[in-house]
Length: 329
Image (cartoon, rainbow, N blue to C red; front, top):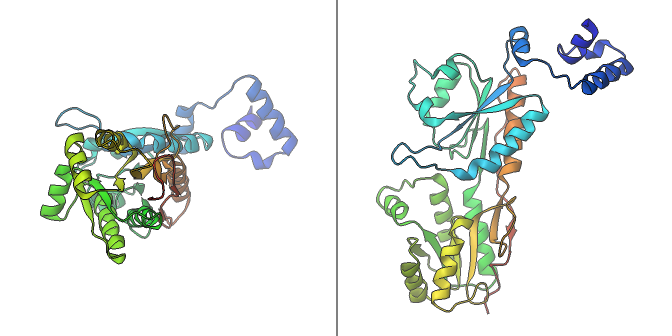
């Protein structure tokens, strides 16, 4: 019994001959044996559970937001499961109810060994987590600290997609923006998400470098979008995400324009792991699954290190022509 316990539960397998280890694991597999996690918690004082903090639920209208975190979460889960860890959801509103003196019970009770935090949590919580000794990795936050962060370089994304369209001969390139987001950005300079400003500013800079003028296409109404496209004789449209492509296609159809023959459409955010349906959307790929695995690996490295930190990572993605982009004729 002690031999099996040492090899399977206590991390003392190195005391035994490799053949003995293999035999014990073979028998455990035959009997579908799994260590009881509650017993391991008592012995090791660790739960093996990582919290994923996400701003998914909107208290205003009860709708879900940021549903595109799912591929990231799957990547996190697959990596953690292979390392004998699991992931649990922490709704952002639960943490926001806390203060510097009080955290939610799930964090106070050390139910989670560490956290992976999505965009939306106030900067002050970095200090709160450090105060409470909570290790955290920050993903897609826009606040790029030297350590413990994974962020997409949206400035590079906006620059890359605009540059490629210019190289393909396009000279009248519009950037699609939401009406409320655009008004907020124009009024305050603070968009709803950091990517919004980074993409627009790099798009504008790239156009001006080539003696061209930026053309914001404001709103997601098909009729209004078609009118703006016709007014400026747009040959290429950059959208924030692939989700906006059908709107542009409908606007193009109303003008009897074909995609990509008459109008190229490129998205700044194309989910890399989604199977294409009618056509493969062109633009900048974002492999959230791979980034999720990277975040999980980073957090486990932090939990196992005495320094409790890991160098931050920035990533961009790759440009793809897809079926929606063509050279301007």
